[in-house]
Image 1 (spheres, rainbow, N blue to C red):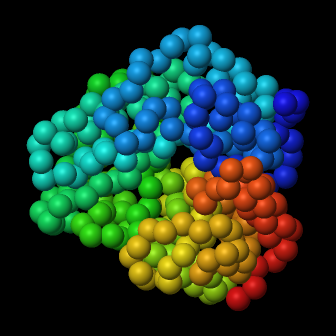
Image 2: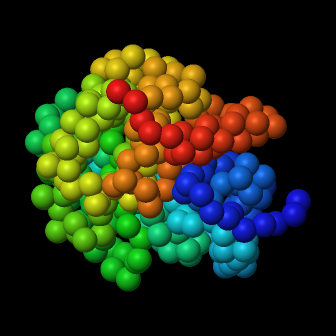
Amino acid sequence: MTRRPAGTGPLVGAHMSAAGGLVRAVERAVDAGCRTLQVFTKNSNQWGGKAVVAGEAAAFRKAAADAGLAPLVSHSAYLINLASPDPLVRTRSVEALVDEIERCDAHGIPYLVLHPGSHGGDGEEVGLDRIARGLDEAAAKSPASGTTVLLETAAGQGACLGHDFAHLAGILARADSRPRLALCLDTCHVHAAGYDVVSKEGWRRTLDALDAACGLGLVKVIHANDSKKERGCRVDRHERIGHGTIGAKGFANLMTEPAFEEVPKILETPKDEEGKWDREGLAALRRLARRKSTG
């Protein structure tokens, strides 16, 4: 495969598989035409992972730099739940988060996306307190880290926190480690949570609500995902761009939003074996960036 710089145009990319090594994720991103890249630095469904090999991490950093992929983003393991009612799970979650932060540092990845977690029935305020404490513990155990942890907006399933922008504001207000925290906005999740991202007026109301709660400047990464389900369903089901209930109107709002012009937009949408769907999704976002959104 011929390596090439990622070039110019909208700052769009995709989450890529690291099967075969993280350098392979870079190669897949280049093949798809990405300018930015998200990966898992370890198995996403396990607490631990194999130790970072310095040479492999250096090879990833070089490959990403040579390809012009920036910024790099990692998604943390799904097992992490800082809001859990189980003290053992919370302890393991902090340990796993510290490990994820250290892996990001080793691989030159500035952003780590984290699901806020589920309070398991103990209540929102208790859950928000636990998340803030867990974030502070992880920060204290990684004092030299340059990684920013991005709290991701949630869809609102079960007792999960983060589907209301007030939840994110509450975590930020409670956390002493706030300077090391920011946000990841997932279009599918906010749509599922009930926010309107499709109509022009609704998009503006949604952004105004986020700005009032947290500040739009805290959004450092956007997960550009369409939704298989209707707005307000509280179900997290990603769909290809333009094939779901957000559709072209919603992504035109996103891609023409001045506040997010420099924010990386990353696909986490269904894939085919040949990578065609990623290329089509990225092409769709680029097309929509060239037109004005419609109400």
